[in-house]
Amino acid sequence: MEFDPAIVAGLPPEFVALVAGLVDRVEKLEAENAALRAENETLRAENAALKAEIKAVPESCPGCEADLTGKPAELFDRRQVAEFVEKPFEVREI
Image (cartoon, rainbow, N blue to C red; front, side, top):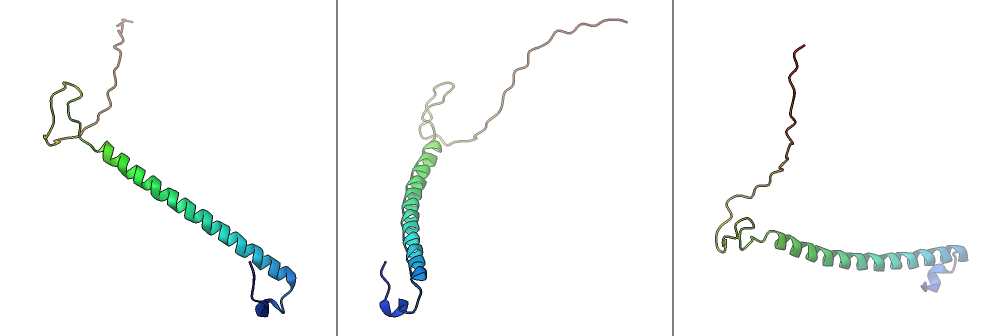
C-alpha cells in the first residue's frame, strides 16, 4: 500500500512499514470475512430448505399405508418405548 508522501515524511520508516503491514492484514481479513459471510448465506439457504423438507406431511401412513393426501395433521406425538423382559421370581419361606 502506498501512503501520501506528505503524511509519512516525518515518520520513522519502521512505523510506516508497520502500518502498511497492518493495512494489508486488515484487507486480507476483510476479504476472508466476506467469503465466510457468503458461505454462511449459502448454508442458511440449504438449512431452510432442509427444515421445510422435514416439516412436509407424508402422503401415506407409514403404519397402514392409508392415503393421507389433503388430510390435516391432528397430532404429532413421539414416544419412547422400552421393553422389559419378565424375570421369574421365586418365593422362599425362611
